[in-house]
Image (cartoon, rainbow, N blue to C red; front, side, top):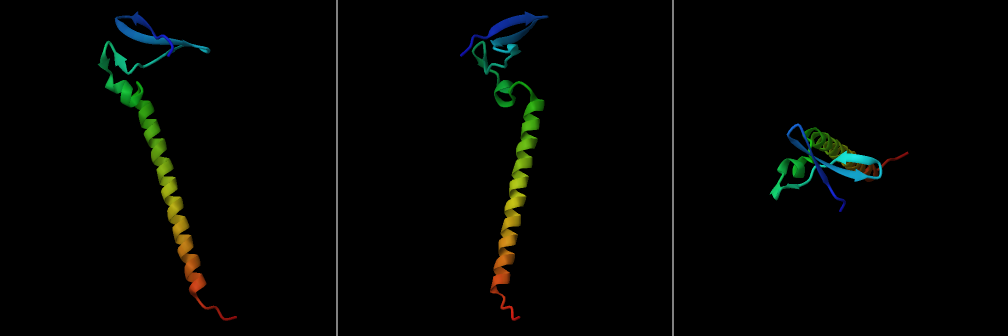
Length: 87
């Protein structure tokens, strides 16, 4: 794992890591031996967690609607196949 540098700006600690694109802010899970639950659950930002939750909910709704449509379509086809059509 890459080394994380700690910089103190206006009394607040900022954790930085250098990547091939430059420096970026990271949100470590443990800070000074204590678990940082906000960073563990939300990745450091509640807004991003909300966006991911909405995206996952939308995907689940689409899958549910699609599976319902396929089930209804199969039932209609089965009902049509069971009918005797005289031409």
